[in-house]
Amino acid sequence: MNPQVVVVGGGPVGLACAIEARVDGLDVVLVEPRVGPIDKACGEGLMPGALAALHRIGVDPPGRRLDGIAYIDAGSRVEHRFADRPGRGVRRTVLHQALAERAAELGADSIHAKVAGLRQSADSVELTLSTGETLRTPWVIAADGLHSPVRRMLGLEGRAQPGARRRFGLRKHFGIEPWTSLVEVHWAPGAEAYVTPVDEHTVGVAVLGARPLDVDEVIAGIPELAGRLDGIASVTDPRGAGPLLQRARSRSSGRVLLAGDASGYVDALTGEGMRVGFAQARSAIAAVSAGSTEQYERAWRTTTRDFRLLTSALVVAARSRFRPRIVPTAARRPELFGSIVERLSH
Image (cartoon, rainbow, N blue to C red; front, side, top):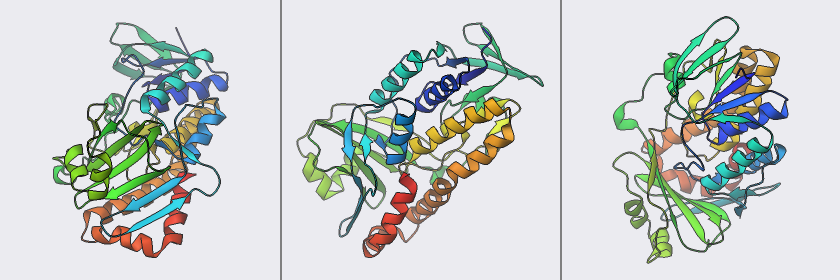
C-alpha cells in the first residue's frame, strides 16, 4: 500500500483531512488505533464557520441550533447572536460518526494502528506501524492531538508551560431540555463553565481552569447554573483534556505537516477550535497537492492568527487581577463583544 498521503489521527480534523484528500482526488490512508466513534472533552459547540466548513465537504451532523454566545458572571450578562447564520451544538461522538461515514463514502482507507516509527528521505516518508506494517508515502499529515506522538518524533515540541499556569478541561452531560439556544459561558472566580445544548434533551457542561478541577464543584459555585441543574442526573462520566496550551516549533518537518491540536493550541476559551482545525485540514491538503510545505506554513499562520492573538489575550486577562472585570467590561461594550464573537466564529 503506497498512498499519496497518510493522515495520522482519526479525530475530526484527521477525518476532515482524509475527506479533503479524497475530494482532491488523492489516495489516502488514515491511521488511528481507536475504533470510533471517538469521544473527547470539549465544548461541542460548532461555530457558524465550522458548520459551513462541514457543509462544504458534505457533512451535516444532527444537533441543536446555536444562535450565539453569552458571557455571564454573578452580576453581569452580555450576549451576541450570530449575524448571518447559526452554529450547532453537536455531541463529539455524533460529529465523529458523521465525518467517518463521509470519509468511508468517498473511499478513504483506514488502518487501526499506532505509528511506532518515522523516517524521511528527500521524496518520501516511511511509517512503521504497531502492527509491524510499513507505509511509504510522499506526504504525511499528523492530526494526532494535543499530545501528538508524531510531533514528538519530529522534535517539534515547543517549550512546556510551567505547571502552576497549566489549564485543563473537564466535560460531562446532563439529561435536561436546553433552556437557551446560546452557548453560555459562566465565569466563576477560578474557572469557566461552558454550557452547550447538544440535542433536544441534553446539555454539555465543560469547565476550564487549573487543577484541581471538578465539574460538580464548579457548577455548585455558580448559583444560576446550579439552580438549573439541581436534581438533574448526569448522563455521561467526566472526561478530561489538557494541559490545553501546546506549542510546536514549526508546523512542518520535511514532508510531514502538523494539523489541528498537534500543530499547537492555545485554549478552549473562545470555542473556535473546530473552525480553525477544519481550515487547517483544507490548507494542508492544498499544500500537499501543490507540493509546498511553505504554502502550508503561510496558510496556518493566516487561519490561526485571530485565534492565537485573541485567545492568548483573554487567557492572560483570565489569569490576572482583571478577571472579575471581563464580563462587566463586555457588558458595557456589547458592540465590541459582538465584533469579537463574529470575528472568531467565521
